[in-house]
Image (cartoon, rainbow, N blue to C red; front, side):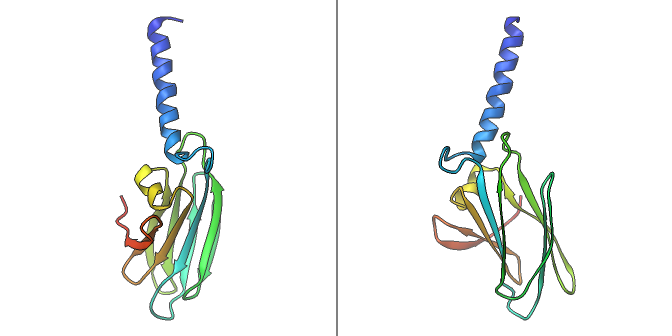
Length: 141
């Protein structure tokens, strides 16, 4: 193998491992095992519909009454590209699609590298910043 080919392979492998490390930041304790919880935090008697999908999974529709929570667990892929997008709606109107899980260090830090807890309220979604023990209004990026 030529030196240039060896360097290219080395850079590719290093890049993939660095990407995977974002979701496996606390290896071996949380090697890719995560949980997402979504709570209906609306102030009125509004039902929340949740339909979460990843690249290869569709968890189906779930209706939550006020105060109810829907949770799911999963194992991230080795490349650290796992995302979960959830379509949110009320019985009256769609609220849109939100990315409620992604392999990003700053995001996962708020989830304490293990569980992302969401509270869907009248104005938007809030993510529990576990290390700070408070919900923060989430601006999706």
